[in-house]
Amino acid sequence: MILGLTCISEELKLKDKKKYSFRTMTRKRFNDLGRDEAIKQLSERILHNATTTRYIVKHCSLNNIFHYRLSSALFPLITDNQTDVSLEDLADLTKIKEELAFAGQIAQKFNISIGSHPDQFNVLASTNEDAVNRTINELNFQASVLDMVGLPQDHTAPMNIHINYTPKSDEGLGMVADRFYNNLMRCDAGVFNRLTIENEDKGFFNVDNCIKFSEYLFHKYGCNLPVCYDNLHDFCNPSEENNIIFQAERCAYTWIDQREVSGGLNHFISPVFHWSEGKPEKPRAHADHFALGNFPPHISINPDQPAKWECEVKQKDLAIKLLQKSLDRRPQPVV
Image (cartoon, rainbow, N blue to C red; front, top):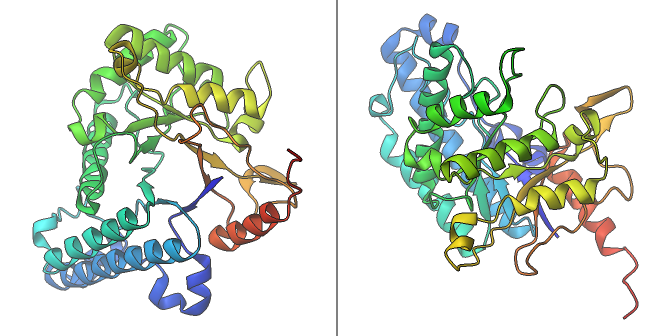
């Protein structure tokens, strides 16, 4: 079973919170500093974030964590059109790229896959052109970060987003999917070839409708858009068949590139899914740890490519370690 770390290492932060925490900068802080000083400090903070990313990937390699989700906040303010800062403004850009490339080399050496999860304000299906333009700009930039890490432009380095749109009364799923696809076509190849969608914790896009959405895009456009299964979202916003293994396996099949299958190839990719649990008093909020015995199921449509489960509880790698110990203590089946 492959467990994945999302963004932050709580274990490293216990050792040195300042060293291993990501740094940000607000727009107000940027404006208060004055442009030259603000860009200088922003460059230093982004370099720190890139170095922290390298530390975390190395930490994963030492702790049997074979998947890592990059933080979407590595480059604060870079895509904020009100601050008007570009990568070329950063004095430390060469060092930043070197650190991210080094992180990618560590990941490749230890067979750690890496993906990303851009923020929920990214809505490719929106009817608001300004929102769509901001989304395209953000997704293109996030894809360029994956490129800096040296990751392939395919679903082995997935960029996962929510559709985050509910069809209006005069819209069907197909109309929303058409608009989504037309806007996706405006994105760079690094976005188009990596993008996945996730079932949501409320609204229209539960597992059933995400799979219908994915199938529609493939049959109409030949677009391969895998579905990232999220067990907590499925619990909060269930489909007709409320069964984790059944729904996760359905999502796993969307990770097969049907274009290659129809051409006689068998291109299996390990699906990247989300595993979490909610707080008893607030089911949609992520708990701190997994309850004892709460293991993700083994999902594999190919024995060599099992699902990778990004663990989304708040204690991150501390929770993963406890889960790993629990998995090690499970009774083994009698052969």
